[in-house]
Amino acid sequence: MSDLFHRKWTLVTGASSGIGEVFARRLAERKSNLILTARSADKLHALARTVEAEHGIDTRVVPVDLGAQDGATRLAIAVAALDLPVEHLVNNAGVGAVGLVVDAEAARHADMVRLNCEALVVLTRHLLPAMIARRSGGVIQVASTASFQPVPYMATYAATKAFVHSYTVALAEELRSSGVRMMALCPGPVPTGFQEAAGIPQLAGPMARIAMTADETVLAALRAYEDERTVCVPGSINRLTALSAKLLPRWLITRAAGEAMRRSGRALPAKGGTSR
Image 1 (cartoon, rainbow, N blue to C red):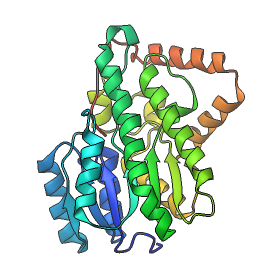
Image 2 (image 1 turned 180 degrees about the vertical axis):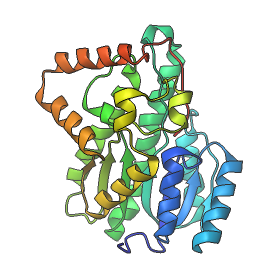
Image 3 (image 1 turned 45 degrees about the horizontal axis):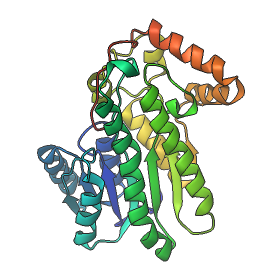
Image 4 (image 1 turned 90 degrees about the horizontal axis):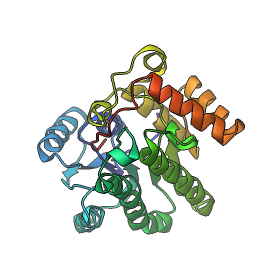
């Protein structure tokens, strides 16, 4: 295990559950000090106490709703006030929903864009200058295999993750030779509370067979980040799916994605979601 995170401060968003919580726990094993943020103060404080006791690290808890109009700005100000050298950022907080776009309130889609895209951009831009000045550190941006193609019935969610993917790869090139890492994590199905809150039926059949646990996903992400990779797609089937999305005509993969959503029962009235 590398010492990339050892006694360095890492900010993890959406840290109260799911992939974000697992990131916090696995980073704590690597002796990273943690700044934990999400909406649920109680869950964050409980997690902070646990990882401090188990791994002897320092933590700070900053409860913020990143989906609020000024949420990302308030978090940036709060983190600056801590006066800590944030070496790594895990932009994990996100929200999703399934269903026809016209069945959901416009505000729901706007909130999704704000959390999945705007908050990520604000926090990345806020922390990058100091990383560049130190010539160390970096950012893990949590995207999705949905970032590789349009996904009917999850149109806004997939589009936001495509933004995250493209933004991250572009920044990685801008930062080449800067000493700062920039990686897009593109997981496939990962059973967490995210699916239930977004209105996605329980994973079954082929989807259940290709699903990876949050722990498997995070371990793959940290290995890829340590290896300075720009994009991480955990799981061989997920990588094959991503490759096919690059090779096949866009209309064909969009049609196939729509059919898969209908067959799986995900083409439901719009519902969702929650920070991940």
